[in-house]
Length: 153
Figure (cartoon, rainbow, N blue to C red):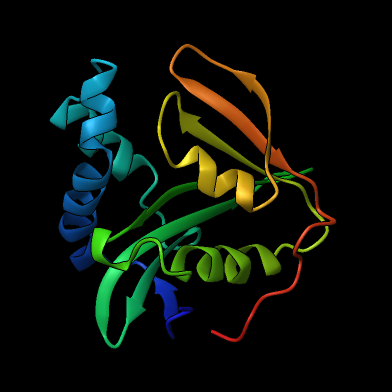
């Protein structure tokens, strides 16, 4: 299933619902590594809450997630990609990711994934390879030659 979706810049009214979503999506993995702190999660979400780079994801008028793509000189950094659990595993994430990265064709895409998180499988299916690690995260990169076209959104 590749559900029809729309992407739009986030607005301030989206902050609390998307903060709540990020907590629901991340909490088990952050608890597992002893890193869940609601104040830290709020601060991190606020730091990345930029309408120029963070898009809200809607399906049938319902806010179901968000994704950020921050351009750098030689790559795109994807972060804050959260989807409602009831929308996961049906192709929506791959379709959204393809649409967002198509806007930046020709550049490698980088992400950080919490060590031990099951989401690493999703990223590997999108063509990412692990390039390094930090204390709590694996670093991944996808070369620009993979999937630089997007389905209609």
